[in-house]
Length: 154
Image (cartoon, rainbow, N blue to C red; front, side):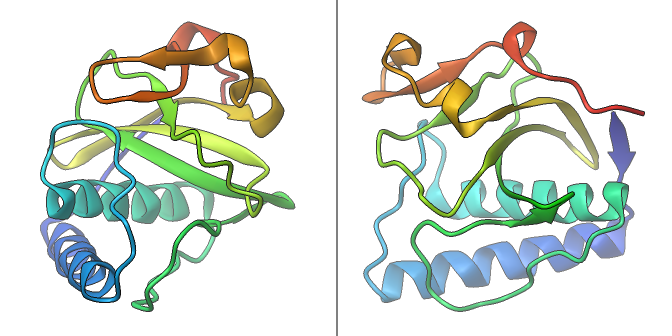
């Protein structure tokens, strides 16, 4: 499933993502990204993915600017979700080894400019398993390939 964001939506996501990054770092929240991208860039990609998901599935996005560690990105069909974003088309669903007790499902988002796609999702119990631990060069984390994900029903 894919959705296109318009230039104004991208600008809002960039502003909120950068503000979230500044607020989190100044409040001492550890940057939990897995990868070599700049933390602020990761927060912008994450905000674009969260906004795109909310737009696609007609749920209200979390636009809050308070410092947070963990917590869900929103609720979809009764499931608390955490969206994991990447700019890599063959990207994998990744999560740190710090288990987020506020999440039921993890969703993979691929951000390609203004187009965001959602190749799939997994229940927390499907992702957070010892057999899914991997080190992709930035420390151990949980990892699922796109082929291992559940797809969204149309």
